[in-house]
View 1: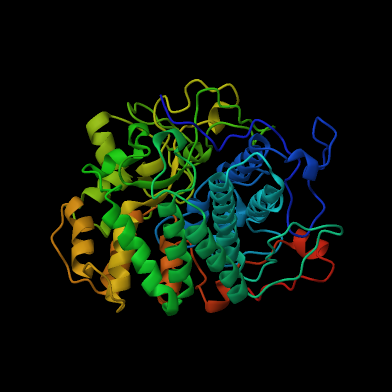
View 2: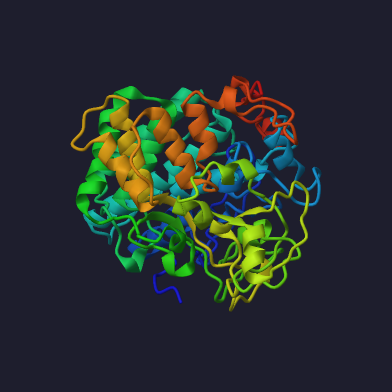
Length: 506
């Protein structure tokens, strides 16, 4: 039983969802029939708005009809997994992204809606918090910082996926359209908002167990390092490294000894966890006609093993995201992360007698990290398939160490050594030291974070994408090229933008 408070669940609809360029949003008067501005007049009510700003985090696997788990969406564009499913037309938008031939009408458009809903809700907090009278200065600063970090998180994903997007820090009025920003300007907005939240928000380096799931200073630091590294903004490398070393020196985080245990329910919010998106099965209400209700995740079912039988550990699923054989074979046999991350079904069948029926692009290798565990959806009151309790691990302390190592390897001055930080990660994996070159660290990240949605972005920022993401002789027939960095903007938003959005040259 999870004992922390799941603050990501909002039990109230505040009428504040929306996207950047459409009028497709819920427009309701609060029960008291007062305006939004008048409604948010107390600590309790502005906290309601803050809770609502967290809510879209849990929509990242499925919300509006598409399967859009951000780890899966990222990894299908990398070289670690296939899309799978029934055939190449099953979730065709993912197969197109895998092969770098996405279309404005066949792309992960639901993420555009989800993330702009998050931006909208975060802005509601920031636009109304100064009007709240019965709130301490400390809480006002904290809530504002949380909202800014959440907004930056949502914008980070919009920026990485689409680049040239509408960026605004005040919600739109009729006709609900906004000019398009260049990707570099979006980056500036994200990073400066994060700096403000970090410097002025009173965030704790780690939240208390009661509030696991809320933004911490360490989470803001990790998001900062992610966007700075992706932008290759060398002017901010010293600050990013200082943030990483502050996390390290705080002694609030440490690597767990057993890598495989991270992915079990008992491993959620362990000493290594910096930020997770919380999902719960007990009383989980998510259903196909209520996809944004409180509860669990559909992602484990999506990637579960088709027609699985005789397994004492895992439940079956729909056969998406088979892991490539090459990804399994890249590990040293002594690397504890190999079998802690990936299920080799041939070995598993030999030890358990389990059986399965492969689907499209089957490899016999499955992403153990997020496979549906037996009993993982116990106690749900909605759709069983949509309410697995696997939290999504967004940032782990291992990434802190590897960011610090890489920044030092790139010539940034710090307190520790690139070798020392890299050694910690490899030692936990049962491996001996290697030279802390940038290439070695990028590869170490691949080994550490397979299936966690990191690899594709690492290939782009390190300049390796064009040479690594090429036809594979099996299913990928196109190569990644620099113009593939930004996906096509959803056609529905192009149409609704009244000429203010120019399509990416994908």
